[in-house]
Image 1 (cartoon, rainbow, N blue to C red):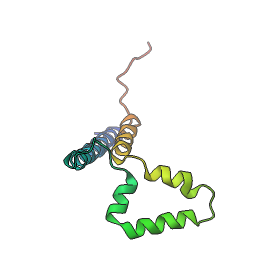
Image 2 (image 1 turned 90 degrees about the vertical axis):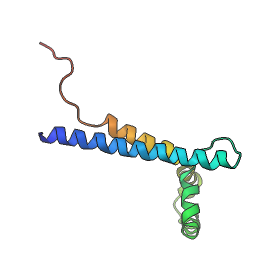
Image 3 (image 1 turned 90 degrees about the horizontal axis):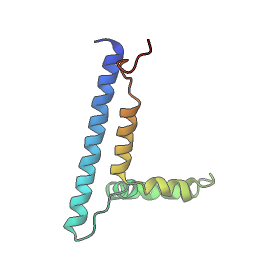
Image 4 (image 1 turned 60 degrees about the horizontal axis):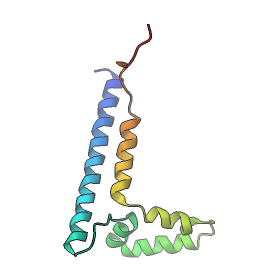
Length: 110
């Protein structure tokens, strides 16, 4: 295999792995919300971080609020932390898939 084929294969494998992580995360979110009697809701980046590292998440939020950078927390940081993790992973997988090098087996002009 030449280098472009290896790169393409690696990107396909990476896209499939990231997509599998997105599907797994959506399944975890499904089980968490349905198991408690709620309608299906995707978990956000902020909820995942605050669940596993609550003290560090609080420090991050306070640091962004008091950083002096305009709009660092509100709205930019708050929007980033409210993004659904499964959809973000799926978007990354789609980007990796669409930007992979392709072979030249398409239409050829004679």
